[in-house]
Image (cartoon, rainbow, N blue to C red; front, side, top):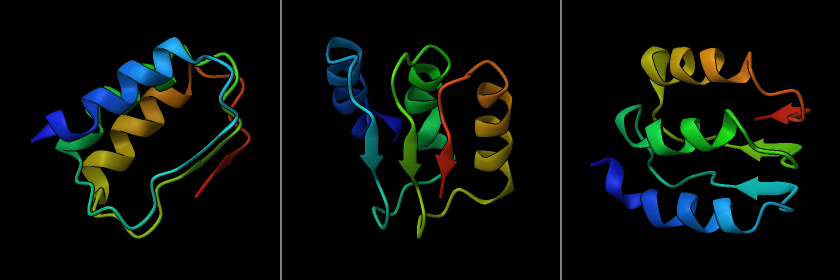
Amino acid sequence: PYLRLQPICESLALHRSLARLDLSNNGLSASEIAPLASYLSHSPSLTHLDLSRNTLKDKGATLLAGVLLANDTLLTLS
């Protein structure tokens, strides 16, 4: 199920100057967020990420929280 975000994350890895990413209201679940979490751990320029209106639940939030400890550029997470 996480393959839906894989192409997006591969593109993000190539275009490392992206500052804002809006993935709101895409029906993303915790299992689908794994590739994005991997990208976030070493994103040099992403400052705003919108994941609102998805179904990440506690598991997805926990995964993101762990990764964000290593990310010092993200300023806004919705």
